[in-house]
Amino acid sequence: MIKSNLLFILFFTTTCYCNNIILDKKLNKHTNKIIVGAERVEDYKSSLINKNIAIVANHTSVIRTIRSNYTHLVDSLINSKIDVKKIFTPEHGYGGSKPNGANIDDSVDDQTGLEIISLHGKNRKYGEILDSDIENIDLMIFDIQDVGVRFYTHISTLHYVMKACAKNNIPLILLDRPNPNIHYVDGPVLNLKNQSFVGMHKVPIVYGMTIGEYSLMINGEGWLGDNLKCDLSVIRLENYDRESIYNLPIKPSPNLPTAESINYYPSLCLFEGTNVSVGRGTEKQFIIYGSPFLDKKVFKYEFTPYPNSGSTNPKHKEIKCYGEELSKDNYFDKIELKYLINSYKLSSNKNNFFNSFFIKLAGTSSLKEQIINGYDEKKIRLSWHKDLTKFKKVRAKYLLY
Image: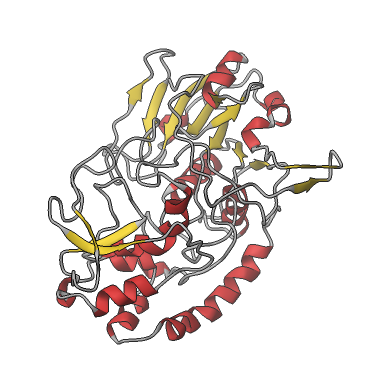
């Protein structure tokens, strides 16, 4: 079990970030304390009493105590005599320490005896919940910190959780959390021909919604298929609006260690579909990029990836890469394509620059073709406009804040 007093939490730097002061209409005073859905216990606790509960959770599923420490939601529910029967956990595992893409086995918690079922393991299709997994479950809770990016797989896990609940007539309570990339909507919209676990829905790379709002969109747009609709309740955030900047108290996954890396992630992750490293195997993941195929006379920053806890087999392992370290003064409010375009232009290995993963990440084959054909950023961005306009109209129906 994740310990009640999370002394091991990695707190994010606040050099570039601070919470906005927001008018709390309920209390009629200014406050900067955003209250996450999990902390609004009185709004959902009564629904849990005398029921068999399953919870989708990981290391980010925490609530603040009176002394501003953090306790895990599972611990809190058990201490409140709620009958938690089992835990489902997404990519990176319950402790959030497993490398990206790792197959994670089911396990049993030593302290409580609770079954921990991996939704990112070799025994199941990624995200899939079997009917037998939720037999005798009366209600499901979903509480995971997301980062608001299409290829960050927690929204795909959410899709499968909602589908399993809908098929088995199990109500789902989603405890909403802030989106650190809520301040913009950008990128190519997914073509469903390229649907995968890193992109399931017709949304852009950055969709500007909390995970609670996104769940409403999955339900409302019929994306579960087969005319399924989840019996869904979203416990909203308090003291939060779309201008709020929220520092995640815990890193959401091993390779997003800082607020900067989370902000740069939507743009730099496209390099995962190329022969350019984004710093996996270093301590500056998604803050740097580079490759042995980039000219060291132009790209002055050097790094060499080695296996570490975040990546057991990083790209270009033990090979010196030449690239760029992004400045902490940067703050992205759009998908920045200049790094990708420039790296392709100056690569000495253009024939192998892109790999098969790129189209899944981009969600469309056109971005790769545009870069190869020498389109500039303005022309590429213009090609997204029509689909982004359509998406924003759909999105507007489900916004809570």
